[in-house]
Length: 313
Image (tube, rainbow, N blue to C red):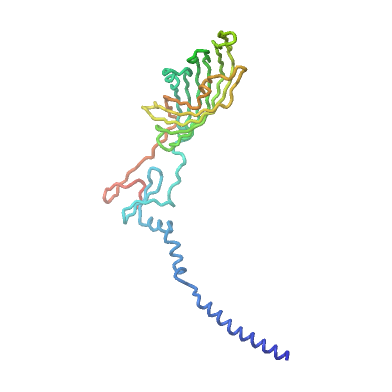
């Protein structure tokens, strides 16, 4: 019985394999090796191939170099100008040389404002070096002075003429444009050693029913601050230019005394003034003038028509 049962199982297994294997083979034969997608794949991959398209256009074009060094092609069939991105010459990041020019200037903001009633400030000057017409290290120095009596007249603040310095740099956002016109942002660190005094201080004493007066003698102090600057510079005529700037100032450190803090800091202004400005007249010193590229025109021998520089047939 066992042998008979085993034989029946073997026969059934063979029959099942005979049915499954042909079906599987049939399904595999129904899947084609090539289809419309695979047959056009190479065409789809290269139809937008810029290098192949440009190679075909170059074969029927002449070319020349423009003022910026770009290769410009002229299609002899269509007459259309086009640029091959694979043949563009590398352009320098900076249009102007490293040591380009210098400038000296005077800031007349404080003298003008004093004419309109400002009680502090004198004048300052600055020197600047232009690197690539982009980076502008600058050094500013000046003199400050203050004398102020408030409207109620109960004291007089005095700060004799004192020196101050600012050191920093500007960044010209129009560095590859004409240096005659600039829009820039910059940073400054300012520092001033100075003295101040407060005289004719009048204090009412209700106990004695009288007014008491006293003075705070001269005090020495130092202060340092940070400035964020945005400005414009325009050429007036020849090497003479005018410039305007807006400055945001933040006091970093300042000496104090038992009688309080100074009201005025030379170069910074009053302690409560976060915004300031400047108006400068400057003289530009050319140190290294960039030369414009030469343009050479050629004629076709047959027609005498002008061709762009470096053109090829």
